Amino acid sequence: MSQTPLEINAPVLDLNSVIADPDTRIIVCCGAGGVGKTTTAAALALVAADQGRRVCVLTIDPARRLAQAMGLTELDNTPRAVQGVTGTGTLDAMMLDMKRTFDEVVESHSDPERAQQILENPFYQALSSSFAGTQEYMAMEKLSQLRAQADADGRWDLIIVDTPPSRSALDFLDAPERLGSFLDGRFIRVLTAPARGAGRGIGRLLGAGFGLFANVLTKILGAQLLTDLGSFVAAVDTMFGGFRERAVATYELLKDPGTSFVVVAAPERDALREASFFVERLDDDQMPLAGLVLNRVAQTRMRDLSAAEATVAADHVAQTSPATASLLRLHAQRQRSVGDQERLAQRFIGAHPSVAIAQVIALPEDVHDLNGLRQVGELLVGADRPTSEEN
Image (cartoon, rainbow, N blue to C red; front, side, top):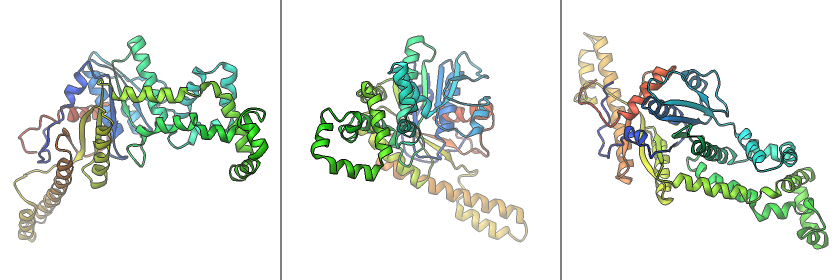
């Protein structure tokens, strides 16, 4: 499909080279919510598999239509084979189950009896289901598990991750450290010291002179919550340190040269502002940025006919040819949209002139099947080869 991209002055992102490079082991698609991250991740995965890679794509809460597009009746925490790959590669897809992934962490780092105590604890059940940052932490935990499995049995040579939707596109980078600090931190130990045994350490201090502090905490948090929290900490006592260690290991994995970050944004003010923050954060943390996918770019026919000229022409023929006038006004509207998008994109480029950009035109309808997903993938990897043909 030929496309007329925005006329912007930026290096071109060659995603085909990224997915074809055998040294690329992980691709992380990130950006604000609602910009097409999940579809981008799945489409890149399909094209990579068509080209011979053994791919696993980890999606975060995809729309049901995306699972159907890959020919799957369901997506869950287990990688499932996608049929219809046209090349020599393979494609497995999965959706993050936040709680199940947390359960797996507990089960793999505890004996069966202690694991059961943790899994049945009310505080753990709340923590694993709704604690702020848990989904982001578990996305990175699952990535670490998949990479370890790939290293062990060679099932995959490329893992593509769709990062969780969040108010800030930076949350998934911070979440492992934040949750690890919470679970390993001194404050939670002080809070729960009495429940772990009043005869030891801080418990004796609380019994002797910290009674007022304990009473205040009980009023604020509730006696039952403190009891559940204390039981939880006692049960995971042998696991303390593990969360932080895994957070550090995953963070280093993200900085590895075999990882490539692809920031996805729509040509809209808020999405590009979020992309700008993300690019700066990746640079600060010295993480490998491949570039920016500018998704859902407007296109127009007859690029040389300006919006103003089209409007004048529409007024001129309105009485004699209403249909022609309508087409001219539609063209003028699209030209204005293209101009707005170019200005926004150029503002981003002005702040980040070295960031390579791939443009993907807006399709007339959502992806409904594997062919539609493949079309998106071909636009992604072919975005560095715009044609001069007008469409």
